Image (cartoon, rainbow, N blue to C red; front, side, top):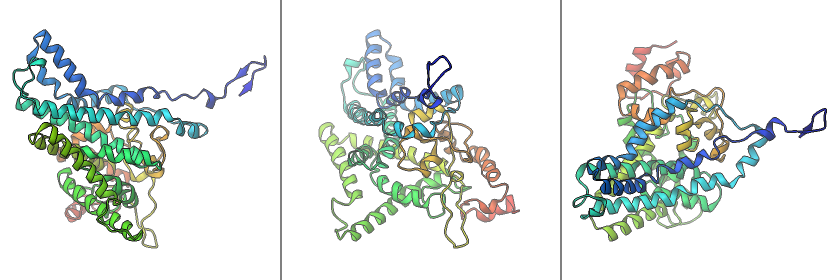
Length: 407
C-alpha cells in the first residue's frame, strides 16, 4: 500500500494482481460431466425425434480431446500470466484451487457407473433408443470414459505430489479406473529422479516412435514401481506382499471397483472396463512421450547426471489445455518444484516450447512420420545442432548419427 499526493490509498502492483484463471479452473469439470450431459441431451433428442443424431453424443470425449481443444488452443493462444513471487504463498494456500481438483473425482466415478449402465442396458427406450446401444455408440462411450480416466490420471498426478494423506489417497482412488495405481509410486520416486535419462522408461528417446515407447513405458514403469516399493517395504521391515505396499493397495482399489461394477452390471462390462482403462492409460503415455522427447541430462565430470533443469522438459503455455490439465504444460516448473500446486506453476525462461498445446500434439504422437517432421528439428536446434547431446533411441543410434552427423 502507498498514498498519493492527495492522501488517497494506492494499491501496489502485487496487491492489484489477480489470477485471471481463478474461475476458469472450474471448466476442467466439463470433461468428467460430459457423459451425464450427453445422456440428458440424448433424452431431449429422443423427445424431439432427433434419434439419428444421438450416436454422436457418445463420442463427446474424443471430440473434445482431438477436435475442440486444439481449435480453442489455436484461437486463444498462450497464457502469458505468471504469478509474482510476492503472491505465491497466498496463492499456494488458497484452498479453492484444491477443491477444484477434488470435485473432479465424484463426477469421474458417476460417469464411470453411468457408462457401465449404458454399455450393459438392453432397453434404453426412455432415451428414444430401441433396445441397447449399437456397436458404434458403445465404442464412443468407451473412448469417452477412457478420456475421462486419462485426464483423471493427471488429476491424480496433481494430488499425488502433495504431502497431505487425504490428497494421496484421493490420488489412488482416481487412478483405480485405469488400473494405473502404480503410477503414484513410479512417477514420484522414479520418473522425477531419472527424468531425461536413458534409464527413465517414461522419457521418450529421439527417433523412438510412440508405438515403440508405449509398451516400454507401460511395462518399464510397472517394473520400476514394484522394485521401488519392494525396497521401501524391506527398509521398514515389512513383508512385500502386504496392503501397506502402496502398489498393492492401489491395485486393490481397482479390483474392488471393477469387481463391484461387474457384480452390479454383469460380466459384459468387463471388456468395456479393460478397454477404457488401457485407452485412458495410453493417453497418459502419449503425454509422457511428448514431455521429454529427445531431451537428455548430460553427465558431469563425476559421471553423475546433471541436475534436472528447465531445458529438460518440453512446455506449452496454451491457456485452454492448461486449464483442462491443471498447468501440466508448465512442465519445467513442475520438475523444479514438484510439491508446488498447479495454480502457482509458472512458465520458465530457457524451457523449450512445443508448437501448440498438448491436446494438439497428442494426435501427432500417433503419426510417427508427422511427429518427427514437427519435432526432430526442434530437438536438434535445442542442442545447437549437436546430436551427441540428444537422448537417442539406441536401436536407431547409428542411423541417426549417420544422418545428422556430429559437430
